[in-house]
Image (cartoon, rainbow, N blue to C red; front, side, top):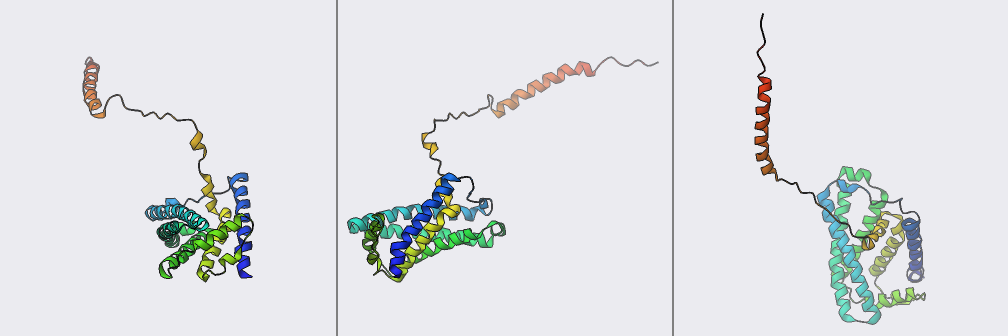
Length: 248
């Protein structure tokens, strides 16, 4: 019963919440969300966290797409690629989420402007990446794409087969459940800013950029200014030496 709930019902609930929230917050009401202004505080730590976290998420998405293809078409080589690329990406996500969480806790200004969703999101990413890395590095779970890939395919065919996931270890089920939770929660948080990509930038007309260059370089301008100042002084000298005042 639990497997049926997790792997046959929960994916559709999470997907429905994700799509409805995305349509409402991303298209119907797009001006009521922001990523937050905490970037003005403790920028060195933020830079390291942002780079590792965002690149980790991007490469993790690519790795899971490779794993999905490997599972659907039974390609062992791609399973190896998914394993190692996913492991490296998970390290980046874990490092970035940990650094961002510590920053929110120890920097007073960031802590003052943080909301509950900031901590919930970082804890979700930390838990998802941590469980995945534990499975990959400690328990050495390998080749689960061959079970997960067909299950995902059955979800998209609207014929969910929870039996494909029944034999998975408990931590794998926890990992997938945490991801479904994040998917359902995603559009109702600041993560919706992912959809703020400037798509019009691709099709907009080219902008001509013009640079202003001073007609005379600064050193030459200084040498030209000196003679000009001397000529002005010579012209003003007779006026200052006017006729002597008469005395009675």
